[in-house]
Amino acid sequence: MPLLPIVIAAALSQTTPVATPDPPRPAAIVRVQFDRKGETAILTRGHADVAAARAVTADDPVRVASISKLVVSIAVLKLVEQGRLDLDADVSRLLGWRLRNPAFPDVPITLRLLLSHRSSLVDGIDYVLPLDADMRTVLADPKAWDAAHPPGRWFRYTNLNFPVIAAVMERATGERFDRLMDRLVLRPLKLKACYNWERCAAPTAARAVVLYRDGKPVRDDNHGAKPACSVTPAADGTCDLSRWRAGANGAIFSPQGGLRISARDLAKIGRLLLGRGSVDGVRILSPRSFALLETPLWTYNGASGADANGDIGGDGSVDAPTGGFTCSYGLAVHFLVTPVTGCHDDPFGDGVARFGHSGDAYRLKSGLWVDPASGTGVAYFATDVPTDRPGRSAFTPTEEALAAPR
Picture (spheres, rainbow, N blue to C red):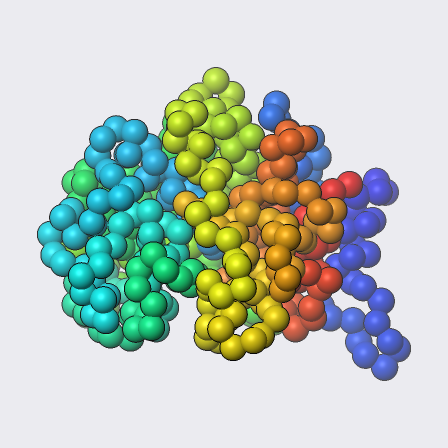
């Protein structure tokens, strides 16, 4: 057996004391290494669909969770290039209503702040909204806002930022978010990918990677077919997408985490990053736009961010945001290996600076990371990942094993 599968398998079933049983292995793992020219190694193990005994492949689409945000940012920058969006304009102008933190009503909120999680929105309310929800009403709830920190002054990773971004994109173009993402990014790159299945072909949806929690399906158990309803139904249970209105509800197609894409196609996004906005002769972003994408906008300094459990840095605690997981961030881009006390953001364990994004939802762990200096990268995911065992970094042992260079 080649060395890579042996190493990965060993890392995913670390030896424990005799009295403690080994944790279950992930249901499926896929890892694609690549450089600027193409794929350099592929590892697959386990099942995309356990009940059907369907082995996972590098071509099977999976819900990659928050890596979806990075792809949204690429589309936003494309619209900025076209003059349709402005990173620093008050988004209220396009939304058609005043978006403000009630505690700081005079501070405008921009796309730059939304993309970099510095908008002062928080996930204090449910960001998974039904088809007929009115986002303006939803965001009037004070629980959606950080009352202690004004926009631009504090980093707090918040999924709710991205439905707002999607709504702004729709208002600027008049196009439905999933169609817009297909036109701007996915189709030009010839990717068999989509947000919330609607734009994916039926054969692609039939190959879905099922997400599991403790062996039980929790997401994308498509039973070999395309879902009849690809979004959260309306309050009355119906699923009529003709009810869509531009910008009324940017959450419909889950811009924060709903991208379905294979590891192989995700690696192509990685090669786009290595190519500074161009891959296989196709240019998606100009060098100027890409320079914005690869620039951190926030770096932890001991008192500048928060995690899911509250503010970090102001109470003398030693860990950085999200337990040292996120310490440097830009326009929906996560930067690794931050030389600040409390940061534990090196799943590779080699001290090399990389950027990309991670994903974590429904017991899936995913990652897309590139090293511009060496011109290499890796795309990976694992399903039904044990989450109760810490790794040497703020990432899980599974992620560390899949990330580590070989």
